[in-house]
Image (cartoon, rainbow over all chains, first blue to last red; front, side):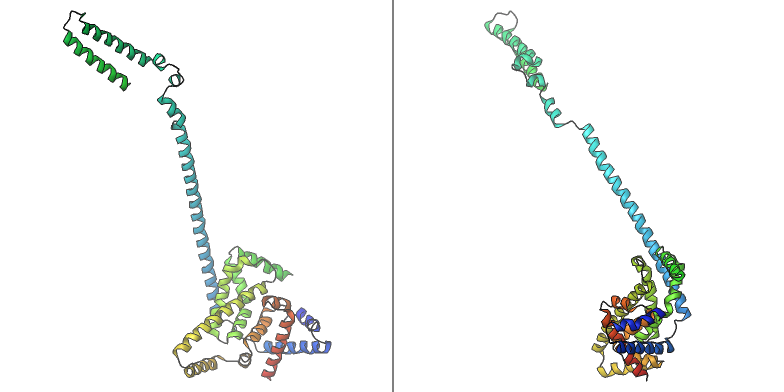
Length: 174
Length: 176
């Protein structure tokens, strides 16, 4: 025991015992500890100490290896996370840049001019041409039916019907 | 003060994982810790194992040492290791009891104890109850103040003082 503790013993016991009793208790402790000093425990073997130092070194090396492995795993995880984030963000940006928006798709089906037109038959050029062609064929058919033409009426009628079908097909094909 | 500064430097080295600093700690405390384990177990081979375990555990726990009394911190770990050993011993004893008859186990135990009790003090120390024995050895080998010992044992300082006084008085009587 160090001197400071010895000096404090009587004072310490004094907090809990009467002064005389405290002095006796401190003396009891001092004498008993003297017995412990006079009967020392065996010392650890030198080989044991060397073995402990070796084990400590091994434990430290193992901890350093584990720490290094964690460090590598951490870096890989961070790199993977960065790659995934960049891929997700990149894909989102790319798709936004290339894919036409929903509004554009809707607008492309029906041109704005037609959508806003009050008279589609007059504003749609294709429809105007088709109407004119149909009217022309209709007139020709009527002429044939009335027998106003000198040509072979039967053949011309078939040709006109075929033409009508073609014009109608072209229109719907666009 | 210089010694305290040295110890602070050594513990800092230990925290950095310096094997040389751990070796110094082993040199400084192995003897006292060994005495502590030996007086509590009465067995050299067990004390060897516990001492090894203590210093290896130190490499894991050194990060939790935040300054203050290094001896207090070290002997707290030593005390925990001893209690773990006791719990393991109790488990082993229970297993042994289940296999052998009471008489057989008593004969075995007395043979082992007799072979290993080489000094008179150890024989008398083993006659004290386990708690008092541990308190006496903690006080003697750790060289901690009563205040620190009471803190380690989580009990009022008056209780610690009283138990130690009774225990040491009894030990003196036993040693005649």
